[in-house]
Amino acid sequence: NAGVTQTPKFQVLKTGQSMTLQCAQDMNHEYMSWYRQDPGMGLRLIHYSVGAGITDQGEVPNGYNVSRSTTEDFPLRLLSAAPSQTSVYFCASSYSRTRSFTDTQYFGPGTRLTVL
Amino acid sequence: SQQGEEDPQALSIQEGENATMNCSYKTSINNLQWYRQNSGRGLVHLILIRSNEREKHSGRLRVTLDTSKKSSSLLITASRAADTASYFCGYIRDDKIIFGKGTRLHILP
Image 1 (cartoon, each protein chain N blue to C red):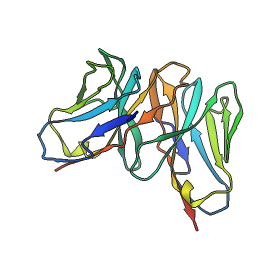
Image 2: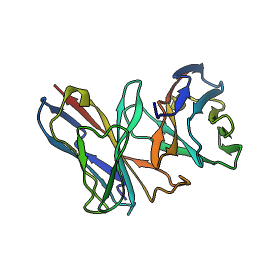
Image 3: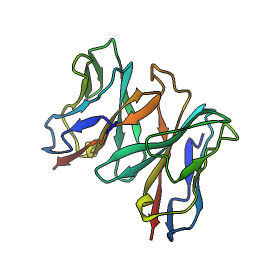
């Protein structure tokens, strides 16, 4: 298994440009999520999905859209990039997201995004 | 902030010493997990502690959970250079998987 893959690894955008960060997993995981990591802020949840066709907002959803048309893919779209969106973005997945939180989260390698 | 708080934010110790880092959270939880992040990489799962457990061991790792104080600690014994990394606690709050801000651990040779 490839696990969780993310593309691209690095990206530079100009303010106002749009782009899609790709995330895919081949573990048949139901739950997928996007986090951003900024210095001193830890990981902050952007959006998540508990299964195909279902998405929900995390802590910092503004400026980002997601969709989950298949179990494998969970792309993150920046509609109009802003410098405040400069960050490292991580995608994660797990078999499920039960209230007991017993399933291991598997993380991708990250996408480093700079918005000029 | 909805995030858990790791304490300390950064820790430097000599190789061979023990490292202790703490996580406090603000809501009732079922279980808590600890993760490790090597520089620039994604998080990797270390250990799960269930809400009915007070202590759990895995190799050189010892995790405790005090639900009355809403806190957990991660102890790494006999530290090695390879333990240099950031460590995060994770838990569920309001149906969302939340991670703390992390502790940066640096093992000095």
